[in-house]
Amino acid sequence: MRVKRQGFTLTATLIVVVLIIIALFPLMRALSTSLFVSADTESNIIALNLALGKMEEIRNRDFANVTTEAKAVVPKFPRFQTEVIVASPHATLKDVKIIVYWEISGGAQRMVSLETYAADY
Image (cartoon, rainbow, N blue to C red; front, side, top):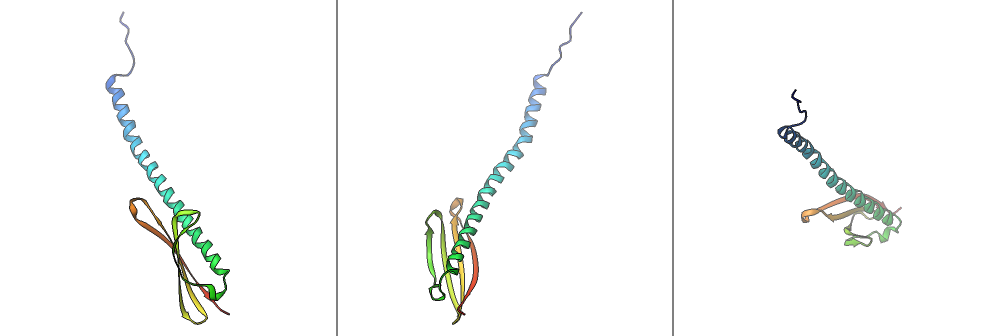
């Protein structure tokens, strides 16, 4: 009496391994993309919070002290720079624009800006 061997052949095993690799490749690509997007989102949130902080700082100044500030590095966030541009459309009104810049990979620069008005009343 002959015993029949049961099991997987080498060909079947190789096919399964190739199918698993093909299935995992898009998942790994999606994971790396989500990590990049997550880092980019974090930078956007930091920049927005820096702009809001700068706006609050300007809001607490006297009207006469609301002036343009050149682009400068943020002390605790060396990747980010802030700039304040003030225009006076009227003697008792100032248009205040706050811009936060940062570099992303490849040397490209991103920015977030907020704009508000300050009035002397």
